[in-house]
Length: 153
Image (cartoon, rainbow, N blue to C red):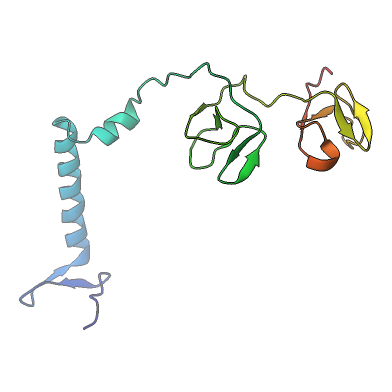
């Protein structure tokens, strides 16, 4: 038995045929009326929640960097499985987390090892764009984790 071709017509039990454009128009109108009725009766809570999301309370508990999530070590906020960046409260993710704020970037670690030299401040050494940077771990040579420093440093 072949599937009906909706671009031409829809076969209904008993051999009756209805043009697909008419059928689709009826279905669109029906869906529209059902959605409207649901909203008016408060049945579509998911849609209403998206229109007026509840206020998010952001914990003041500090993020822990680096933290491990699903076997990967992260040195900054991540957006895995989320539309927004978040961080863990635990070094090894235990389900305790919060959304990140502008105050959550990872902190530079001083001193750090770079090319077998101990660095005590943000440095421009080794950065081709002549901008200052710092390591996010005590051993950049081993870990290779870094971030740009403030342009004023």
